[in-house]
Image (cartoon, rainbow, N blue to C red; front, side, top):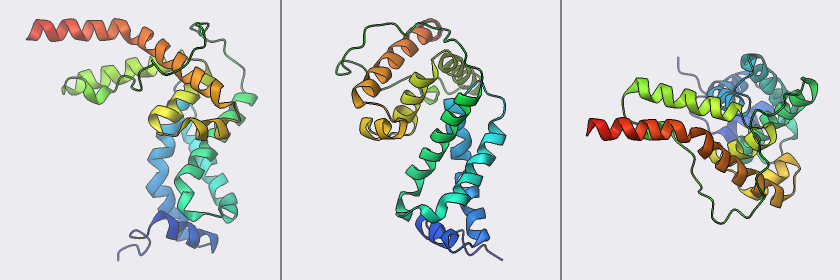
Length: 205
């Protein structure tokens, strides 16, 4: 028998959850668990307890769904819960010194590129795609948390600068500066791999 909740929109599922219907919540978890895992992985690629953190996210979702006044905003609300949990964990865990310098001048973002390297745009060979993904993950690990958070929310989640400022409780100018510097540092960290890929491509043509 088909799950009656599987065809419902997120909004309808949220409303059902607010009526405390567990089956609706199970469908929400099923629908969004990969998104939660992916966002946690992007925010904290070097943490080993992503599964535990994802479980905590959905515990918070269940506990607080009744306070969500606009059920249509569930996706952005979920992102906020993940980000808040990430910051909570940062405060509890021993701080790591950043492994790369972010001391470049804080400038405007007008001249900065919007895009970072996307593994899906590499050659179609799956091994190369996996290698590119791992290189990007390692580069992201080297960014200080506040810079990584800003660029993940911008590039992966597609949030506006204003939304990121609200979510991270940071001035919008600071958000723009962090994103610009993070993009620049990622380009620098990824340059050896990009040069290597370019050389391989030239040899094969």
